[in-house]
Length: 200
Image (tube, rainbow, N blue to C red; front, side, top):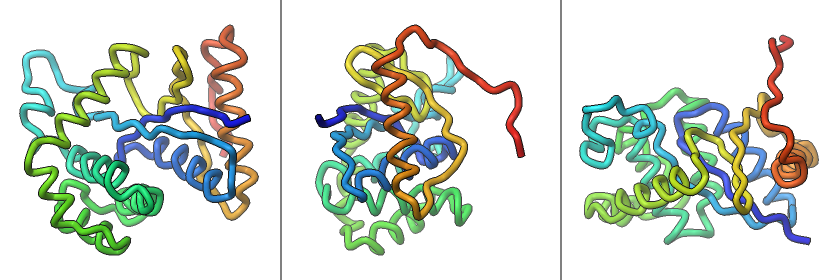
C-alpha cells in the first residue's frame, strides 16, 4: 500500500537537507511513497514581533529566493524537481554558497535544464511568494508547524532530525523514512524522544 506523507523544507536547514536526501533517495529507488513537498520559511518563523514579515520584505530574507525557485520547479517542471531540489541543498551545505544570490540559483537551474528566466519571471511577479505564503500559513494553522523538516500525515505532524545524510545504500534511506512515518502514524503516544548527547 502506498505510503502518503508531506514534508516541509527550507534550503538553509542541514536537517532538512538530510531528510530530503533520504526521501529523494528512496523515491529514486522505487519506494512506494506519495510525497508532497511543502515550502516553509524559517525566516518568517523567526520574525520578531513588530518587524516586517518575509512576505512584506522578501529581499531581507536569505532563503526565500531559493524557496520560491524550488516551488516553481516543483509545480511547473516537476520532472526536474528532485534533481534541482537536491542541488539547491548541495549549493548551500556542500558548497557554502549564498542562496539569496540570483546567480547561484540560476546556475543550479541551468545545470538541470530549467529555464531560469522563466523561473525568475514567476518570482518577480509576486505570484510565487503568495503561493509560498499560502502553503506556509496553511500548515502553521492546521498542524502548528514551526520548523523543518516536519513530516505530516493526516492530522498528525512531527518535527524530525535525522543525523545522517543519504548514502549509496538506498535501503538505508527507505528504512529511515519509513520508520519516521511509522512512528508518526502508528504510535501517537510517543511525543518526544531525544538523545541527551550525540555519540561522535
